[in-house]
Length: 247
Image 1 (cartoon, rainbow, N blue to C red):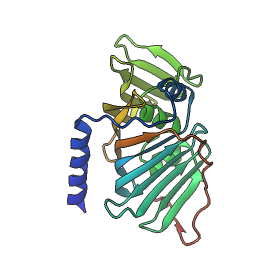
Image 2: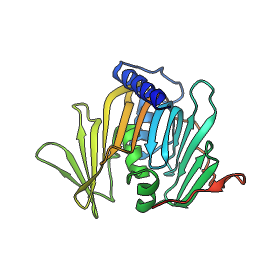
Image 3: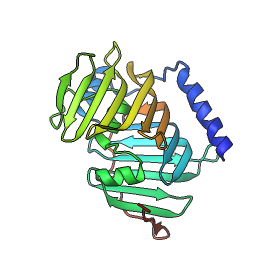
């Protein structure tokens, strides 16, 4: 299994370093998609993922949905066979993990301590959305903005500080989050691809301060559904057992 994960990570790395331009899906004009990206819309993405967290690691095919209602659903499937092995669902209030391999679940409130316990880092829905789209909305009223002498954008909210570096085209290339002055995680977007003739991240890596927990995602398809995504179901399968944290 360790060898497989190393090989899989290598495939992700090589894929992420190659150039890629996705097909041009029909339905929305580039102007409409740009409006969605800036104001908040529904997105459905697919690709591959290596996801390492405090309870283990999962790798395989990925389906990811993120809605304008601040809900996220990440589904991981085994390569080739396509069996669902892991799912993360999150809203502004709820946090649900379904581990189909271990037949257990976690259902709790979505807050900083929970994210640090189960993801290994305080990565919020808002921050993940910024990374997936490679761009911030025009306004972030919950954050104080400041342009630093380096040209980086600094965001402050309570004890949280985020520093974002952009490329010459205005897309995010790196993002660092600190809590009380201590690094929480670092993220990088080394490559972009075009959908709807607009740049979207091709590869995203997110790693906690220790390097023990990480997301490595390579996207192969991006869609903007014509209809709003359905609200997430946070009911747990009756055959699954609750998983308690050791922390």
